[in-house]
Amino acid sequence: MQWMVWTLPTALVFAGLAVLLAGMAIWGHLSPPVARRGFLRMETDRGDRLYIGLLTAAAVLALWIAVTDLSMWLALACAVLAALVVLIWG
Amino acid sequence: MSETVAGGAAVAGERVGPGGVAASPAPEEAAARPADPRPKNNRAWFLVLPVVVSVAFTAVIPLMTVVNFSVQDIFSPSDRIFVGLEWFRSVTRDPEVRSAFVRTLLFSAQVLLIEIPLGVALALAMPKRGLGVPAALVVMALPLLIPWNVVGTIWQIFARGDIGLGGWLINNVLGINFNYTLDRADAWITVLVMDVWHWTPLVALLAYAGLRSIPGPYFQAAQIDGASAWATFRHIQLPRLRGVLTIAILLRFMDSFMIFTEPFVVTGGGPGNATSFLSILLSKIAVGQFDLGPAGAFSLLYFLIVQIACYVFFTVLTRAGR
Image 1 (cartoon, rainbow over the protein chains, first blue to last red):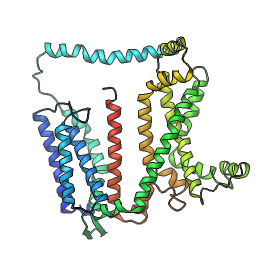
Image 2: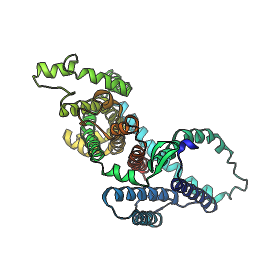
Image 3: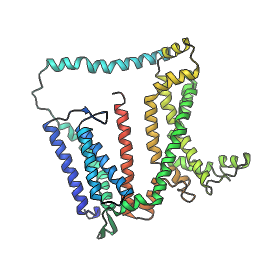
Image 4: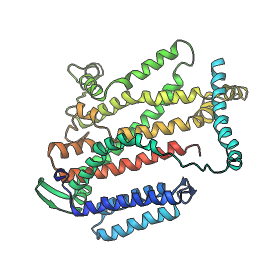
């Protein structure tokens, strides 16, 4: 594992993603996802919306770091908010 | 004519088929039959395991490593410093990266603006019956069968002013001073024309398939109404090509946005940085300079853009009919 040059923050991010995916799998097993239509104007279930939400969050973070020097914590808050909006109303 | 009608019937049948099969018997069956009490056997999932393992080793683990690279300044595996998001900041604000991004977008836009109309025009001009059909199909398919690096080599020689047929003709017959190794515009035009030569046939073949699936009666009705060739194209053929053209646009966008081999072989990104697209700049940073941190951050941002475009591509393709 030495060659993968792990750091604590990246390990935490990947652990978080793994927990998120496992959580979604268990949730999907307990109550199967139902597709519906939201402001994205296409049929999505919660897995689709999670994926779109994660992509949106990543795009927000990338644009933020490209254009402003404001705190990245603020960017993270905006990204999480954008992901939640997609997850709930998408 | 019979060919057209048969094709039309097949298309019509296809359209009725899945809808009918999926819509009518399913609810009745569901109502008549109680839920299956037997436990579901999911053991077939184990058959997917080899793919999961190989993808993990070839894609997921390397990607995780790239993420680790992107937040560190690495001198050796034991000598490295955590720098947080600094590389992302420097890469997104690097004028060279930004200009490569604009250049790549511009190249993709030009590719689409030329290849899509040209492909449709070629498809319209291709013979509709007789021996010409297989001949045209084979000729159109030839450039698609040539490997990328060979296409690059062909054009590298073809466009040369001294020994290349194309370059020699432009210089000596047309009298235009053309040298893609020295002139930025000439290099750009060479790469663009090469891409048009290589990939317009894909658009043409897709459009041809789309045109062939339009039922004959549409054209008969247009003829009876006295529609001009342009009106027939605008109101019958073009709307029916919507699906295949969506696929063509997205395929060509993705491919031209990630173009690497052909310009790398022909111009190597030069002269100066005239044809230095995102992929060429990335390989220069990652492999040439061995700057793993900035290259990692650059890769992830590039990956994000491609990922978003891919998702749009996938969504449009799979949900187009719904």
